[in-house]
Length: 157
Image (cartoon, rainbow, N blue to C red):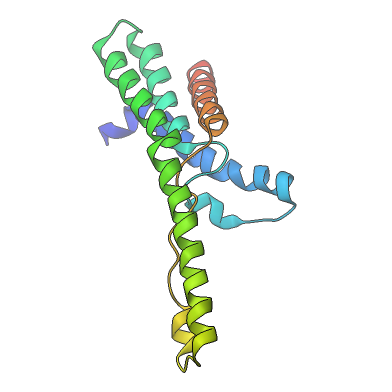
């Protein structure tokens, strides 16, 4: 069980769990609705991906120094992950929104044109996931969450 002695890994995994769970009260404050599914979904405030990679990078910097090759690897990985979260994944979510609307519009046309005897089956069509990426502010607060969690963990232990 040597893996349990890998503090950067433990901190990074904790940052993911923390960021996912904290989405629920943040969403409740914003909308007055409780959505427990947020703990298991992508997107939202804060970015758990950003929290994980920034916690990992911070922990490696604390343990091995900012001049270590481990820090360099982790830092570059963090930049790529956070850039991807605000770029490609966010745009894929926007495309999913448009595609879902097109599917709904097409379905309305078909329903109006003729009677659809298998309506229950058509209602079971799976929509594309729209909340894939993050707004830049979500990535920022995800990164801040990870950094603070790593600093706190090393200060406590």
